[in-house]
Image (cartoon, rainbow, N blue to C red; front, side, top):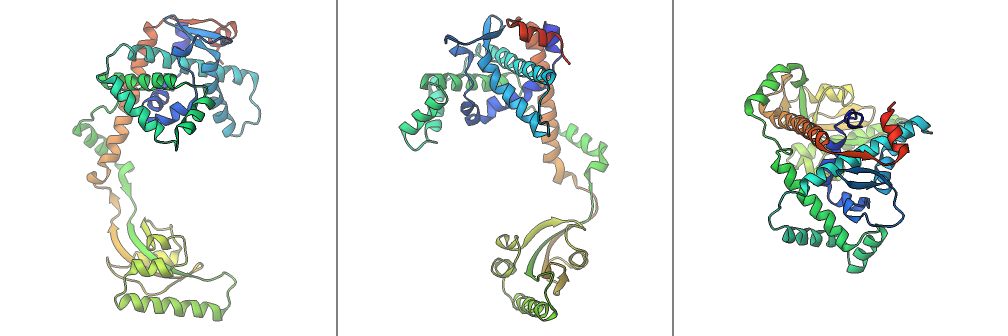
Length: 348
């Protein structure tokens, strides 16, 4: 049985643990019953982890999440075999959750009562009144004591992850630099320009007279800017596209983001320069260049944070995967339901 469970994707807990540690409110909102609330009549136990029962209603929310993801990609009907697989996958997630919960419960968190009280206060602050908070608990079939239990488990889990260096592992500078140097194609770019524009729209079916009026209006606006008016403020008031509220700021763009006539003008400007009136199929534009980045390899300082996050996430997942495998190897897992037992022993 352990071999069958171990063959599942170990990364299934990576997302789960990150949600438990980081999401907070979304975990509480899920309404998933914890293993400390097991003495309730009418519940069906489907497995045990080190003697601790896991119930069908704990597995159901995870199964529903998996089924929704599957349908999201176009499946109108889930086959019986796929339903079996998704139920098994959901049970594995709960088994993993329980295994790490048990381990995290063994550690001592300093000032636990104070921290729980602070988090309870934070949760309650999201509701306008005590009665609204009570309604939320009622809808989730949860007591205030049960909520405190979840908060305690989350704090214990967070402390456990930190104690075992499973979150935010350090990444040496030499590793970041080595990744940068060994992946030159990943860190090359086309020429980029940072521009803002003011656009006066013209309809595609506009006649010559209407277009001429639009051009004249754009030229008058340009004269105001050349005379000293602030480009950003004029763009907010006069521009007729979705970037007006941002002062016409398009950010850094590469060739092809805008029509060819726009590109030709924008990429020929000097920093700080304002273009002549430019005509495109959308209307008439005034362009101002704010910055330029040459084509070629992106400088290391610009991508260091991105690489660090990528390597940290990768290392975090690897450490967590290995840790979960170790926990599963030590745990005694019993499948109590013949239906689940058969599915787990006969994967697709």
